[in-house]
Length: 320
Image (cartoon, rainbow, N blue to C red; front, side, top):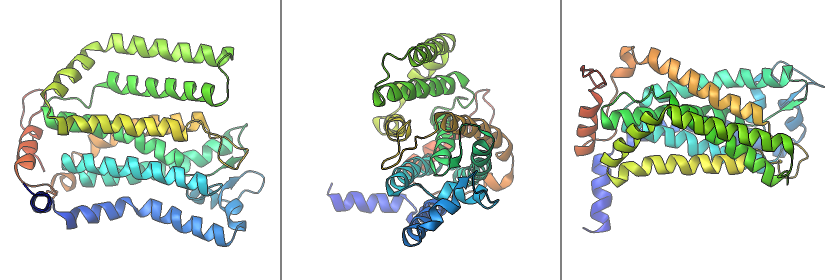
């Protein structure tokens, strides 16, 4: 089959126009951030006035601080992470035909973290500044874990979004990676507090895997049934989180004396997971989120839709 025939088949299977509409909604936030970065490059005084600065505080900073960055390197890293996480989340949502749900949830989580991040800086005694999109990136990363479980559920017909052990192990693994990254970055390999923290998190990770081993066994069995194209979904998520840990945690910002807030980012991941799960349970009961047009048609869409009608108890739930 020629490359042109493959491209034609893909275009006939995917509704490019409809997917582009959803993609445009996802790109609103990086578009706003890019416009602000351009404005502060033209008017440098805006950079300090738009971020939360407790020494010169204004109410509007609560809503602008996440969209302004300390410098271009900070902006580039945060926007790149946002694009990786948000677009990949939209791809997962498209595969399970939950695009509306993903877009609404992502915007709700953005609003939640806009307020939470600014208040975190406001009431944190060790923080006097707050700026950047990375807190929102962290919250959307937590939401991405939820949609990955929904994808596994959709493909396997098992109830997997309630596999808390997998999510807990994921958060602990991220935490261990963050601490190890910090120790390597700042040559703190002999620092007793960091060694104790890494050992404690690693022990909790091992304990979580032991306690929820049946969930990992189920995940292994599910993944064995998938084609390689479906397994790549999970591999891609691992790659995204590896990039996330390496480039956003806990890097000293380029050309700046400031470092990122580890606690704020971990709080973002937890908020994304908790808010994502609670709102998924609530919003899926509404008809609006169960009447979506298919972006992907053909054999894959049909088989995916069939598997989505099954729940763990064997009851039938109509697929949107």
